Length: 385
Image (tube, rainbow, N blue to C red; front, side):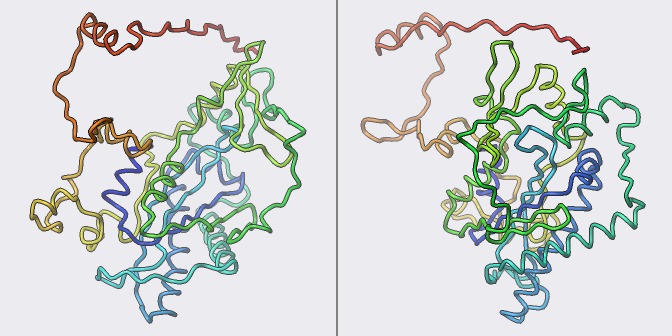
């Protein structure tokens, strides 16, 4: 999560303005997307083309640019608030276009509410045309799990926030409602740059300026977050699992409740199909784009060494970031700086002898014994439950 966000900031996204476009889908399409990577890819192409067309039209109106090229990075999320299966797109799109075969970026005006509605209407029509052309009308049956009907049942139930196995088959996920969290439902009508149509929802109100690198990295870490947070899990007295929602729903729903088997079923549905890439690059950020190498960020170290940054290969970027660099990027803790003199520190030894480690910790008046580990929770699964 943090490492991928850092690599996107340092080696992919130039310092220009961006806007996040979030598209969610009707329930009847989520099952197809969850199990068939090709359909997800085709839906994403339709979405990117619709947003890019809007940007090109804006650029033509404002600058007279006929064939502008936008760029985007898409993160495909597969989970919803209930830890349910809900494939949707988070698209980081340039707030403008590059001139054809040029490194010049042209920023366009912020989209209006009517612009977002027009883009969503185009997406809706294109997807309906795609489904009809490929034989999907009202029947969205799937053959992906033909050899594993049990998984088909689990995936189908998770899309609807229901239980797929056991005695509770077909029952909705249990909710814990806290009356003090009940709010008046406002829907999407009061939100800026947000539109809903035929089960689709498109939101485009989050924007980041080119100079706001910290804010962009924070947004990317949020989009790339895992499907569940361990800190929000807890057990009831009868050893059932509670999962606290990040934000209570308008009806006061604050927790969802699972048996341990139901939780395993829910998590299994979130696993993507094999070879399904969840991060995609489009337009000027696509690997085969001719101008990509001229607009993506370059290493500061190469510039300091007098090397032309355009001669730097993308493969020179680090495969992994060090733990020290990640601590600095995420928590603003620089372990390589001396807390007393603020000088640069370096690793001089790696001590592994327990006796030496204990002496050092004792001298520093720190605890020399490791914390006591709690025993693992043991339980048996009743598959007839």
